Amino acid sequence: MEKKNIDWSSLGFGYMPTDFRYNAEWKDGKWEKGGLTSESTVTISECAGVLQYAQTCFEGLKAYTWKDGSIVAFRPDLNAERLQNSARRLLMPEVPTEMFLEALDETVRANAAYVPPYGSGATLYVRPFLFGSGPVIGVAPAPSYIFRLFCTPVGPYFKAGVKPIKICVSDFDRAAPKGTGHIKAGLNYAMSLYPGDLAHKKGYSENLYLDAKTRTHVEETGGANFIFVTKDGKLVTPKSDTILPSITRRSLVAVAKDYLKMEVEERPVAFEELSSFVEIGLCGTAAVISPIGQIDYDGGSINVPSGMAEIGPMLGKLRSLLTGIQNGDEKAPEGWIRKIM
Image (cartoon, rainbow, N blue to C red; front, side, top):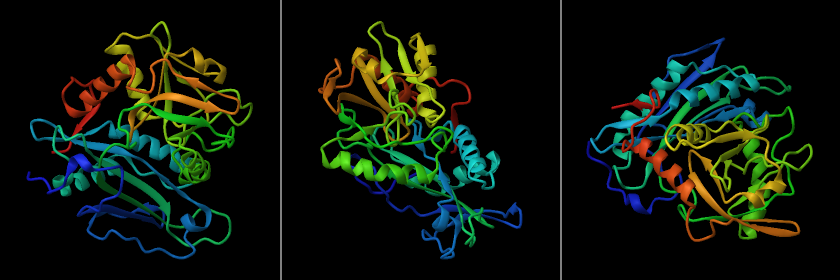
């Protein structure tokens, strides 16, 4: 497969339209047969549920070109499961796993020339999303829905790549107890835009959100989970009902246990603990792992011992192993890799 003439090394994390995307509609209580379309725009009612009451959720995953030329996706079954969980919480029809995977396969195959070459440092980001397309004026679920999946080649999420970033503790709350923090709903990300903009204007890459109830425990950033390394080499990840269950975090936990034989703790993490960790990072599909060198808060700063020059040794090993699995350079656990072509 001949690739597109794109300067893969200069790609940022942005949208580049590709040739095809998948579209399917749900109405009259069932999904109609979906398929590929070259149309990159969507036409919906001005009174659509997504426009009036933010009835939408989404996913993010990646496809990779391996050294042998094959194209694969990383753990897409978990993305299908998480989209179903989000749909249930927002009273939207679930996209069956088989349909989700069919949409993924068809779209990536149709856009194979846009999957960055092996070793380029770029990947194909895949964005499945579901939204209320039918008109609704009273506060109620929409009568019809659209499931759509598109893809776009991307580079690093942060401009600095894997260099340590500086973040700050937000004065705002990300998610309320018993709210929607545990699902990938568009409304959660809309709520993070204003505090995120404030952080960026102050020179920070991201916000650190504390729990809304007590503001004493670490939750996540606007779009990624946290991971920590202790002085004695344990991997610690925050546990909370209001944190999105990151597929990358779950995968890193497995890699830490099974490949590096690290002890792993998934538990609530108090903010006052942060100064005791020797490495801190955030993790997610887009960033994989981004190391954190400094955390500022009202009244002081936490300077992470791993510093601002480069990623720490343990997070570096974890990142190298996970990206190696994704790129086909490390043996993957059974069921983690879906071969598309």
